Structure formats: C-alpha cells, structure tokens
Length: 242
Image (cartoon, rainbow, N blue to C red; front, side, top):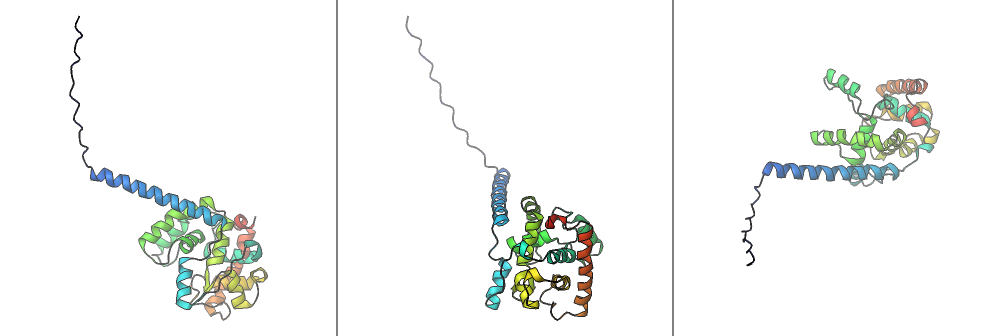
C-alpha cells in the first residue's frame, strides 16, 4: 500500500498585537511605583541603623552660610526631659499615632489651616528624605513615606533622628550643637527649663531665641515644661523612654 501523503498545512500567519496605550501606561506606572517603593524601603531600612550624615536642607544651609554646626549624639546622651519637651511642644500624641495624627488634621481643617498638624514622624521624613516647601508633591510623598518609617523604625529612633537634625538657630542643627550654642552645656546636662526653651524655638528657629527669649518664648517655655511633666505622668512618653 502506498503511504498516505501527509497533507501540508500552511503555517498560521502571526497576528500582530495591537498597541494599547492605556495598558502600556498602566504597566509602566506600576513598574515605576514598584521601583520607587523599593527604593523607599531600602532608604528607610538604611537610616534605621545608620545615622544620616546630612539632610538636603542642612546641605543647602551649609552652602549658603559656609558651614553649619551639627554633631550627632545618641539618645542615651540626651537628657530625657529634652525628648519629653520636644514631644510636648511638637506632637503630644507621638506615642499614640502611627505617623499621621488624624485628630490633629481634623482640628487644623476646622481652624481653617491656621495651625499645623504635622507630627514628629512627618517632620523626620521631610527633613531626612525630602525637601522643605509647601508643594502638594512633597506633601503626598511625606504622607506616603511616614507610615513606612513608623512600620520600620522604633518611636525612640524616630525621636533620636528628629533631635539630631532639627534646626534650633541659623546654622545650628541638632540638640548637641544647640545645647552648647545656647547654654554652654552638653545635651545630657540640660535642665527642664533649658530643654523647654530649646523646644520652644521650634518650629521657627530663625525667629526665636532660647538664650534671649521673648515674652512669647517665655510663656511657651512654661507650657512646654508643664506638658513634658504631664506626658511623663500619663504614660504618653513610654514609647521612647522604655
């Protein structure tokens, strides 16, 4: 018997994929977001164990002034009352929120934006990773990165970084430089009044002085000193003192 010849089948023509711009944009947006998120995670992990050598704002001020005064000091060498004073002045509910104080935000909105609602965690993100300014982009990045920092860093680490990068006078950054600049003592030797005065110059260090306090700074110092004692008594300092 003759072998049946196999019928030759024509190869199917390759169909050209249609270009779908919306799908392409979504794909690249997802890739971009994933890459940005990965970079943010690495940056947050890095500064959780390594002390930031400088910040963008500090670098800008150093170029403008020809140098700045800043020396890193670990939390163990900062008087506990200084940490409590900073929290009492800037973020009394520091131990109670996860980076964004929604109650403070609601209050600020009700007051017509006349008062700030930025937490210490948000200020750390702004100072260490971002830039100063009121742009919506910076605010969005700050709001996105703050919970990430809260998830990876301890509250004690957040406050330690804050106290080391905050500006206390023109060209004076961190509590080590500020303590010696204003009072001639190290941060471990600050008294409750001195600590409250340092906290009182925040967040307007160029317009206020801890060594030559105005009436406003004196009143604010008294309120901060009382606030620092209150948060110690009611447990709102436990997250960074334990």
